[in-house]
Each structure stands twice: as C-alpha cells, then as structure tokens.
Image (cartoon, rainbow, N blue to C red; front, side, top):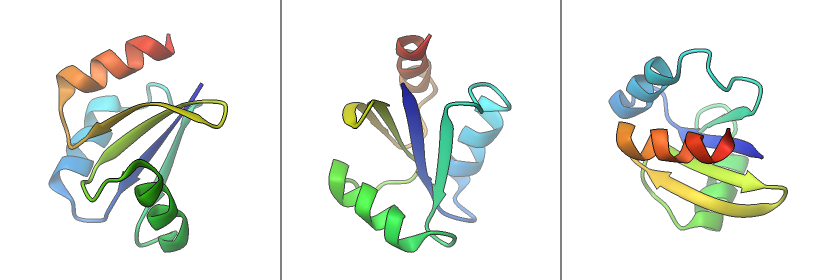
Length: 84
C-alpha cells in the first residue's frame, strides 16, 4: 500500500497533518504539493474528486482504497491502521 497527500504551501491543515505524522510512514507517503507539481496535483484531485487540502489518498497498487479530506486526526488514525 502507498499513500499520497495533496497539500498546498501555507495551508494550516496541511502543516498540522505534517506535524501530526512526523516521520511515521515516510517510506510509504508521497507528498504532492500544488506549488511543486501542479499537473500531478490536479490529476490526483480530479481522480478522487476533491478540492480540499490536505487530502490523503490510500492506494493498494493503482486502486484507491480510501480518501480522507481535510485534517481529521481520527480519520487519519483509521486510515493508517489499514496500512499496518
């Protein structure tokens, strides 16, 4: 499984999520920041139908398993329990 996180610079929820996760799961997380990779950011946002940041997308191979929109520690914990 792998995780992609859509984020933007200066987004309070994105910064809170980054702090919350720390270095945990860094081997499976790919951060896709709008300012650094606009094309990939919008491709993924359209794929899962989101305009919210942060958006966490859990994949099993190429299949989207779960999407968490916004910074919600309870949902973040549930998502990462599926990873373990």
